[in-house]
Length: 101
Image (cartoon, rainbow, N blue to C red):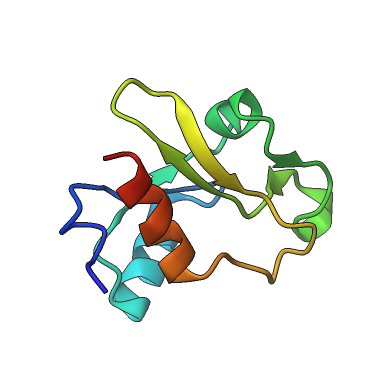
């Protein structure tokens, strides 16, 4: 299976967590993609992905979501599960990226 990098795709993770915490997570899991700290939920709200009151102490957080955006910024594919523990299969993501051509 080709990697997303092989297909010319980039991964960006968006979180309400401070940048330092996200970087610690990335380092610990040996992740190579970039993290964006969205402390004020600006990007999260723009995409309608806020999960109000679901974080520690009732903090608003992002709903776990996988989005594929084309080079023009148009959303071409999205996985927004009902349960936070469900994630799309990597093969499903690769197929969606390949469909962009």
